[in-house]
Image (cartoon, rainbow, N blue to C red):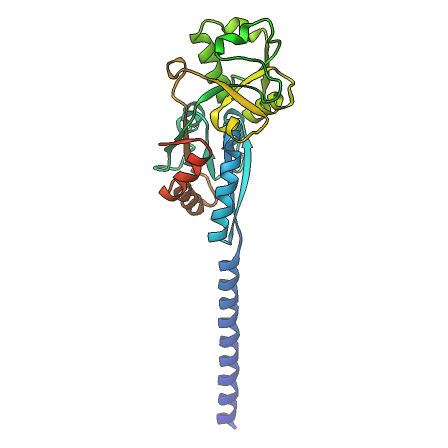
Amino acid sequence: MKKILVMVMAMMTAVMMGCGSQQVASTSSSAEKETVELHVAAAASLTDVMKELAASYEKEHPNVKVVFNFGSSGALQQAIQNGGETDLFFSAAQKQMNALENDGLLAEGTRCDLLQNEVVLIVPKDGGKDLADFRQVTDSSIKHIALGEPKGVPVGQYSEEVFTKLGILDAVKAKAVYGSDVRQVLSWVESGETECGVVYATDAAVSDKVKVVAKAPADTHKPIVYPAAALKDSKQLTAAKDFLAFVASDANKRLFERYGFEVK
């Protein structure tokens, strides 16, 4: 009888251990399939290229979902400083990234300069004014010029630098309509709500409703450099670093160039 009891207890123990093993295996399998949400804050001028990059990355990493917050670099910077959930930040200017670095918010060793851009003057493609120089925006035929809001929108800051260098900033301000980001500036010119506007070359390149009539001389503004970095408090720091490496890879440099960016 004792032998039978021992055998029964041994069998029960084996069954219980087996169930435990299955539960661990099931939990492990579930963890492997768990979707990772990667929150990426990116300058509005990066909208099109970043969406294409994310689609490619998600195909290679089916458990990762890239969630974007596009906007002006200044607004994104403030959102991060106010505790908004962000794993990666792609800025259109050094100023905003510098502010986050000074606050100790960047993950060590992740900051890098990715891209360069140009500032251009645009008009509606159909029926646009016959302009050929930034100085011509002071002409009486120009009633409104669309610009980025200079406090938080880098393209607006670069625009003010250009017009200051040309000595016409006050005259331009009298006609300025300020957008919350570069894509709003682009949309106002596309619709004809303003006779002209100042955007990045890459924004003009993705629109078939505007044409570039002039490029700002390089000596009229600071170099337009796009830095990127992972955030120190990221909940998905490993994935953030991996996505940043993917974006900065040689294979994807050609994609940025196709969108009109100059790769650093």
